[in-house]
Image (tube, rainbow, N blue to C red; front, top):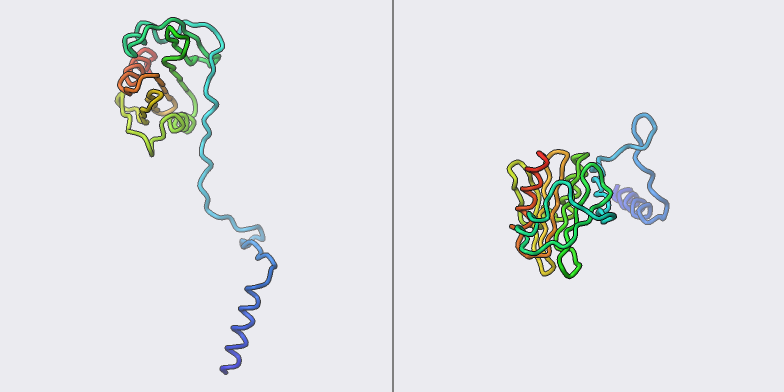
Length: 178
């Protein structure tokens, strides 16, 4: 009896060392058995680019100057419809603030927010009421990004204080009735 156990164990060890691939599990209907996987996450579309001179149709330059603390000398907009992204420039020709609006699929709205200010690693953003996202600040400025249902609003500022970007988000959401 002991020899049979040793022989069986030796065969098992030898079979484990073979280089032949192990076939995929097969379901009762002969097709490969499926495994449980996470659904693919939505991809954020590329960030918009300025393509034409403004004005921004939903945000006045004076509101940006007041909130961000810098004079606005030029406004450019993207080709996005129905709400283009708006780019506000400072006197030295650099962008001081951008506003990006997305309306569409809820998963994409969330992906846009997570790309701008990942909710897992940024400070929570919960304003305006009912919106959720993240806010970050650093050496190059701040971002405040929130989503609600099928909408996302992302504001980036060259200022380090996220409160400035948050005020712009609140103004845009109120102006557009989002």
